[in-house]
Image 1 (cartoon, rainbow, N blue to C red):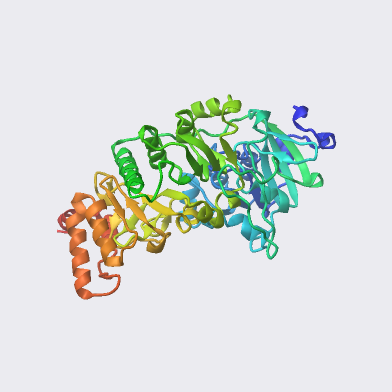
Image 2: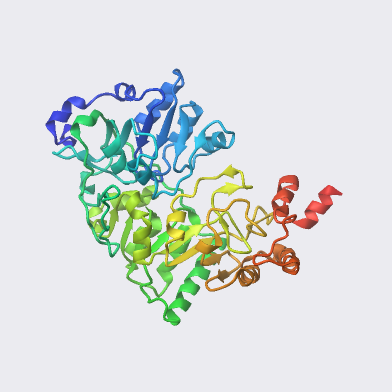
Length: 503
């Protein structure tokens, strides 16, 4: 295993997980690798959770995005986390956040590194970074994600490295490690196409800061891949039909523009829909590469993909990392403040497809909160892409829970993406193209095209009565959250059910 530490002076830093975890003290700020379950700490943070069961230990934890192997939940259960940022998906952690027992900072994923470099966040005491191996200059060859690891390695006072022997050393070369200069000396980031590589292949780190090296042999947690169902298939078809029409109108070509898709079953279904389409030579400039990315590569539809992590099922993981020679020239992994940087998204003309929890009749989108107060996962990178994309598309089902919940509402309970950042809204019912429309036009388009039939008549009534009252963006404030209130009182947004229960 020492062959994976090519700087011999670091051999003496190899130690046990039990010894390494003692470097982390109460009150410290810890920055850990990991982006949507990929390339995350699999030993140190888990051991920290165990340590927290017997010691009074609380840390502020920063990562790229979510962690795998239930690590966030283990840390939350052991009361080790005082503050967490910038993203999470764990139900145990989420519950503690919503109870107010853990503080959570929900950040645009492009901004965390920027805030650290500009000293607008607390200094990183310890960085924990997963590596495939350590180069002769002490630099780190990362594994299946880059995330914020470049910044953590640069700014942390101490560094702990987890060398994961499950990851083949052949991953060398799939990463493009580039760190933009600090303000006010920042230069242009010279990427003009998704396949441009502009940096080095490993993460630079001062070897003197490396306090401990441990070995692990665990694969990333597999992604939860759901087969497309009737609703996600319908959403995918609406989007493909829309793109085909844009080609007919001369706004796009059959190659489209670089695609970005959020993680999850809807995004996976949308991308899978391209397999049977007429589009070809597609590219991606995204955050996460899922199974559908590599399925499209295998189908000859996708020529190149750029992201910050690979989050795939077990079968897909084995297919890709067991045969890297086939895929290594087809994708690249970058730091998330490069994969998500607004300037590049605008320059490349990215088509962004992200998921909404709900949206309202004017096109405002809630992608983070249930009932306006309880965090679900976080904004992730959707805001980075939505505001700067060539096309900003948000998708959700029209209704759920036996149609007791409408996902199209008079007013969203929490706003993450304003109407100004949203071009296209899609549900399984249909698609609303909001470009060039005033608020009243947008509302009617959304009601006609996106609303579940069980709710369309009432939503039309709300809009008509609001228009009679007047305003550029008409609302009945006394009713605007009534659907949310109904659901909290009766378990359904349907008016007739509410009336029955109250009577």
